[in-house]
Length: 422
Ligand SMILES: Cc1cc2nc3c(=O)[nH]c(=O)nc-3n(C[C@H](O)[C@H](O)[C@H](O)COP(=O)(O)O)c2cc1C
Image (cartoon, rainbow, N blue to C red; front, side):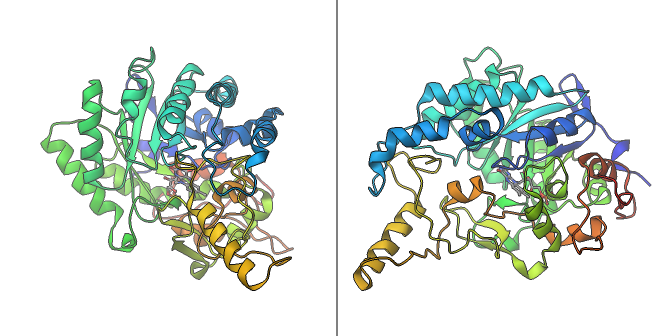
């Protein structure tokens, strides 16, 4: 009976363990997790989401405070067009975050960065250009283009000296999205080095509509794989979403997948950036607490634990300090929902009452504070992967333990850690 370790992912001259730990922003798939995956011979991801917050936290910069100082005059004004990002500082923060990660990397694997197009940052094209190029300047091994169609992304970097050397991949959830991407990227005379096919059970934002439950990952992977064969395109396919055990992974690898991308199992590891109390909430999660809803101001459906503190909080939008989801015209769906609720409250009760916003979440503020508990479909199974301790909490795992369990598991089995290990 085969296990994941019987397979290898070939990416150019690299031969890797076929496990890719997916990007989890903000500050969830952190440097420590990514470099551990690389040390063990696979691929780890960091994320460049809210990079100023991330570098302030890790490297004691003060980008967020300075930005707030600059744009304080906009507080209370629902039009945030003026709250632009300084592109020089964005490049600087990105180079710091990625450069330090690459310096810390050891071993035979690779570290990629997850770069989401939906982080429009009040100037979608130029901020994306800066993020991608700064990542390449800082020596990243690869960039996974995520959360968007990325039709113009190759064009933004095609004159960069590393354009043909850095590994470039795209996440898609349908053949149609892939076809659109390949058509546009062909203008840069370059194919992606890998394609992550993300199904409806993945964590975080989904590339599906409200009918997400009608799709299944094996079906989408099969359709894309058949089309690539027909077009004689040999691009490694990497399924993602709901691959919970090594045996789940082996099924895809035996059917021709080049590797798998996994994330949920790593959210409860020591190296993951989530605070311990959030890891415990993930362990405790029951199936009925995990929902896909429309609370994200990006407009994409998002999977999350519905009991997290972000839901219904009504926090004041903090675009002066953050503003990562401003659309280029100074708008964000949360900003609008908050203004609407504020106006409504004012009509009935002029002073002193707290606004509640039930239909959207201030993603920047709450992701920054780890209060928006995005998660994968199988989060409720995490309790099967560890020991419950005497005080009712669960033993936090080491990323190495989870990685090795994916590598060697057979028969759908999940190896428990040694008590106290991790
Ligand atoms: C907590 C969490 C946060 C995530 N954040 C992102 C993200 O910022 N960008 C992205 O492209 N995918 C994100 N994902 C998706 C993962 O990278 C991955 O593709 C997917 O969750 C794999 O499925 P699994 O979690 O069932 O293993 C996230 C997943 C989780 C669990």
